[in-house]
Image (cartoon, rainbow, N blue to C red; front, side):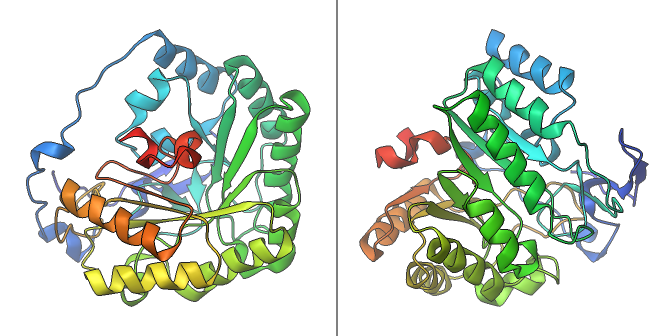
Amino acid sequence: MEIIATTKITNRDGIKAIKNGQKLNKFADIPTPKKPSWLKVKAEFNPNFHKVKEQVKSKQLYTVCEEAHCPNINECWSAGTATFMLMGSVCTRACKFCSVDTGNPNGWLDKEEPINTAKAVEIMKLKYVVLTSVNRDDLPDGGAQHFADTVKLIKELNPNTAVEALTPDFKGLFSSIDTLVNCGLEVFAQNIETVKRLTHQVRDIRAGYQQTLDVLAESKRINPKVLTKTSIILGLGETDIEIENTMDDLIKNKVDILTIGQYLRPTRNHHPIERWVTPEEFENYREIGLRKGFLEVVSGPMVRSSYRAERALQKNNAGL
């Protein structure tokens, strides 16, 4: 992995940003260890992959699959699924694990995005769709209404489609959480990402461990029928005790579903990898989480928040 200099770009929407979200920094001097065999994925494509790609392109949509360099893009797109990323490709935050471009959209929104997303879901005949978004601290409500409008239009055109919303924290605004949780979705997700001790080291300073817990708790309080979900990425320097403590905090805040995956460093400017977690360790974390009371724990090296999301309630580790 080569060292990447700070790169400034202007995206297709005319918004200036830092490419991959991070400027050249001290992390660049720290090499990335060689990937173990269990993390090497063979790229396989089928006609569905190209159909999904065409829908994304023709509707001018963004996907977290592309913007976050997800390692599962070949599997998911070939299966005819994608995670749509709303409100553009530029995030107002700069978490040290994430490769999404960072900048200030200054209030820009694509007004056609909600209906275009709903039409794409209809054409792709999706029975389960995951929506996520960049953080939009430049918007008064963090983009909650735009998110909710998209969910409502998806439901209007696709009444039998289940919707999972993987959201930003909306700066902790309960009014924004209320807007989204009561718009008709089935699953509300907000990622805690890491253990408490590493939060400010890994996440943007405007994010917070307690803030994420509060967002998840409030969403369940507002609408107990909506499932709540979060994700932890491992390999950033956390300990087993800290992982269990995080699980306990999530259970106390009535989180239903937990996903656990391996951190994969996007560039040399991002947080270094402290360890490769083995498949056996991931299975052990799953068993611990289930004993603690989660409805399901999807845990594995390649697991991401939205990976095989539609299978979570099959309670079989998403078929892994």
